[in-house]
Image (tube, rainbow, N blue to C red; front, side, top):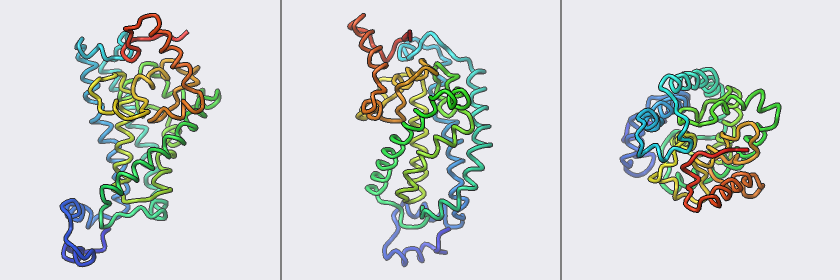
Length: 293
């Protein structure tokens, strides 16, 4: 909760006029407790999970041939009922796992010093915090994900997520409740080590969720702006990991592919890609079905 009762008090404390964004923040947060603001993360999780996959759902259901050519596994189609079952399962997991975690983690958030007051972070502060968060999460998530592919962890936890050999956008967080918590730790580690403003905290988790939804979408769309991000994995890269399934010992990357390059867990994917390109020089690996021997 902000320590100011009025805008004038906040202006006096800051020694300047508030920006437009800070005025909006004051009007929204002034009478909300820090606990309520912290719990917004669960609200945003459910909201963006419900909205962001809709374009991919519509593309899948439309059967429009001009868009179907961008589908990575075009021979497999999901019905509305199948996608709704996935949605229900994920929302239930959010309720039983993420919601309680948000509540009990509040003292940790306060102790770490994630702030809710004014001033809001500058553009550069926001940018660099997000860069640090994604680097930390990407590296730690790689090892956690790789760990989940050992026999015990896969058979007891990770196989739930791999029920989707053909990923869909709604299946991005489809997983065993314990996996949601396990892979939530790398995402939380960045804000824990480099705490910032709670709006940065919110934005980080929203962006991470949107990235996971796109990566699991099953479509390699040519107009996606993420195609221009260096070392970005993307849908085709992660789709291969799902297609191989429990035998997969590669493409563990969360966002970027550099860990798979460094630790040699990209070789299977590269081999298959080269093999198909050798068969047909015009073959586009990212938009065709593939077989795993």
